[in-house]
Image (cartoon, rainbow, N blue to C red; front, side, top):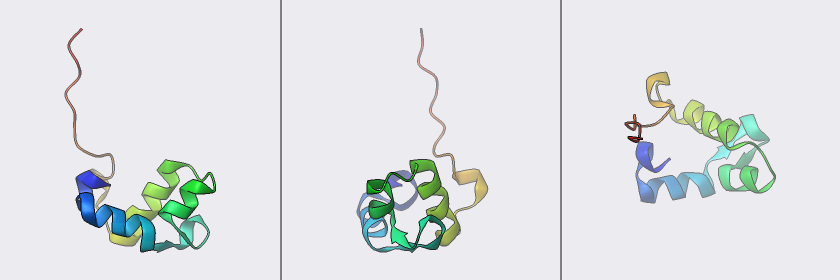
Length: 65
């Protein structure tokens, strides 16, 4: 969430945005109830209109062996 929304705003979203897709609770509450993080993230993406190409996060180059 920090990559998409910034550190401060992502905390605000997690604690205040009610997500119907995960039971009408906030992201923090959903995670505490055991909802899969991926499901919570996709619910946030849907509510905030995050485009599909940004839903997987930043590309991180592979570590050298």
